[in-house]
Image (cartoon, rainbow, N blue to C red; front, side, top):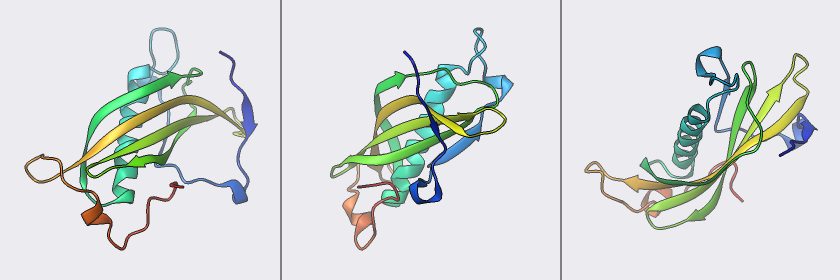
Length: 146
């Protein structure tokens, strides 16, 4: 699959990533690109971080689905994980995670490299599902929600 490079967003188009990381040689696979499992772990971290901005709870990952690896990630790429709420249930939140990579010395081009959907479940101190809404009363949704 081909990937389309786009210019880095202007300030008016700025989105705040849940997390951002520079890819390092320790995470490379035998083919020379970043190991997909490393990207999956970062998607999981980004979704958990984002869920806590929607409602301050402890979350566990229930399922990762629709993970699509669009383009390889290279050593030195600056990878950003952008999240948005797809659905908000009683005890779970479905989060869309779009992963974009900025590469090159000029850092002018952003490439969408991965997309995923993650379901996170809010849990109590006994790791049993607990309502999200109780934590959300009077709080705005996360920064990227629509």
